[in-house]
Image 1: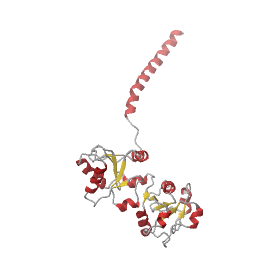
Image 2 (image 1 turned 135 degrees about the vertical axis):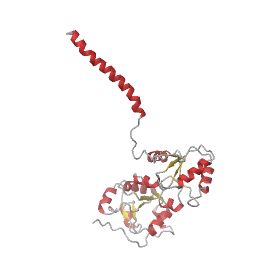
Image 3 (image 1 turned 30 degrees about the vertical axis):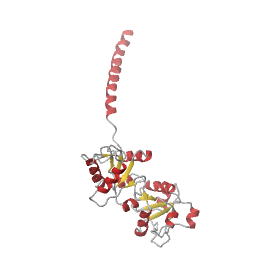
Image 4 (image 1 turned 60 degrees about the vertical axis):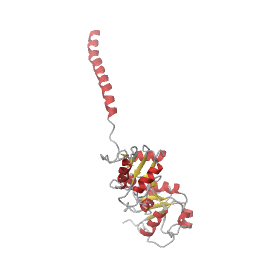
Length: 277
């Protein structure tokens, strides 16, 4: 009986030894093969381009930590209409010459090994590549590019910032834009921007259904304002997560809008009706 059990145990023991050895070999190999990156973790993966490309997730980490500066190399009005919050505008003279951008960046960072990020208006925007190429020619070798840029940043549910010039441009020229007052309903009823709708934190889903937001036009500009930009950013972030990829928040306050000569917030304009057929 003992011999029979012993004979049966040997194959099991051998199998266990082989399995353990195989697992020990495969584990390091699996560790060397990372999982398929998500859309937040990838980039264009272009070859032979100046500057190291970074993903959306990496840019989020950089902005959250403040570990390095992010330079938006678009024209001033482009930047004012919408930009990644925390990015600094280094505007070009024109679409081909990059002398101004390079001189400003090198003045801020004389060290050619300095770390910073360049970005512009999406995968096909050539401005950041041209600036990057000029910086490489000047000896800079340790900077990054977020080539996915503003459109992909927004498409992935991140909100962006609108400055006063950008707010005025949208308010005065875009009759389809929706302006959202994130203040309390009481102060909203007392005074607000012409045709604005009131959306509080936590109400984006309801506003998407009840007509306050243009359900059938996710590409419409939606600009959120409040008495402080932090509240506006919170509501704008929630609206962005409802697939309003052209939404943003005003970087100032309602008082800034009321005192501006560039935008007359009580002027008549065509209001968003909220009709859903």
